[in-house]
Length: 203
Image (cartoon, rainbow, N blue to C red; front, side, top):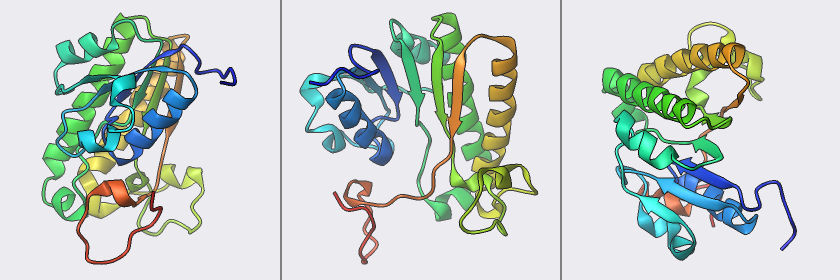
């Protein structure tokens, strides 16, 4: 195995049983990381991790509780936060308050748990919902700070704005290596959606 940055690093992947998270877990394992996955399986599933279950530490936990976040952050070098109640646009547009509360709570709890555990590297994976409805395509990152974010996903949008504020404040007041990353709407075999039509990025 070629030695990489991740070799022997203890990495927590929050939301690691989800579509994107499970791909990330496999890549980290390939690079020699010691991976812990925290997921409540509300959207993710163990089937996504079937190829690496014997190589990871899996915790079925609800990250809306700070005590649970502290448990899974214990002993880690790096936290990669991909945890979010991603149930699709139709659900999101009818549950703005729930989405805002849950995703913000998870984000703040993980960040606080990492702070208490003195974890210096933390990745926040955001959402394409931060961009305005009239954003240019292809979309530049600075579109996220122009105008009102995507209206159909107000709950996720609000969380992203809170997260940006939280992340910027944390960077200013600590020596952490904190990074935010946005993503679009990838689709593929492990989404477990029954849309009656082909999806993108098949595995």
